[in-house]
Image (cartoon, rainbow, N blue to C red; front, side, top):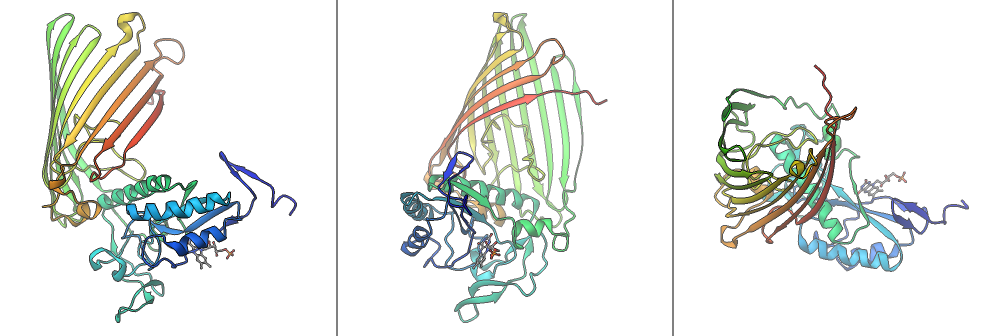
Length: 433
Ligand SMILES: Cc1cc2nc3c(=O)[nH]c(=O)nc-3n(C[C@H](O)[C@H](O)[C@H](O)COP(=O)(O)O)c2cc1C
């Protein structure tokens, strides 16, 4: 007891006491935007060292309760700013609890009255959402039968959480908590009595041919009942003289839905062409990338692994692969071996993309995440610096350290947030076979 009212250092936050208020859904906002009552409610409780807010939906699809303030629109960010200012004024700290209810929802809460989503299509029997009944009266109603999320959509939900976390930072929260309990979306994936998925079934065939100056790669892949994806790459290098060379690198992906088309209709051809000129330690490259199709170029990632894509303008943060997007990249590489430091190299690049437009797509999953208005002339750019050192000898030979800095900026209508990011990557290659 003697310690309860003493301060507690929580990873850089100085809590004024050790009382933490548990997250509690209150359903007190008049809409989904935090209002005067929300401000008052949290202000009155700011005596706690830390408040965890009520569950805050990361998307409209993540809602299971009416009158529950969310974090998926700018107005909500503005509302939470006022809540956070009031709590901070009273020297309290506050975390947003980010929430997706999954199947514990009702069609009256969902975008366009659709079914809620979950790991499977199993009904949450005897579970209520707080929604509109058949007479349009708010109250507890049996949760609607859900539909199973496609693999492609799961990546979209991950992006919703990332965006909500960025909005939480913008709104001035001291941290976030991800709601992983009480039978909501995360638990619906973890719980084997709910999750009966058999996906992650992907296969591919392909091959590669290479000689000194020319290479061809060809792959065909299949994501079961979602899409067929074909990939080709060719690289050509021409040595002008011993110190100078020209290189071309062409990538093309063709993606078409097939079978049950569980990720919706997809018809996409995406390509990039890079030209590089190397002279001594310097390499200058120019890349053009074009996404042809009303759906974005998509690829497979599993769980927390985002997967990789081999196309010219997929760089540190953005991939410039939105529907109908065009992008250009300028890149400069320097090899410090020329200055007597073998193993040290540097990259600077700038990529600019525009023309994003998916307003004509009939794919409900991609368009549910974001619709680009072709008239808004959305643009974005990314600038990266990358410095890498590979140890050249001794027991740690081939171990590498890489420091990457990235800045990404976009006009208001772009799907992803502005970001300044620093990554330190250490690699220690181990020969297993
Ligand atoms: C009205 C009410 C709303 C709640 N809403 C949430 C919520 O939004 N998020 C959450 O993680 N837990 C929620 N909970 C669970 C509480 O945070 C807490 O874990 C639970 O009440 C058990 O703690 P207790 O034994 O002290 O009551 C809620 C509980 C109550 C009573």
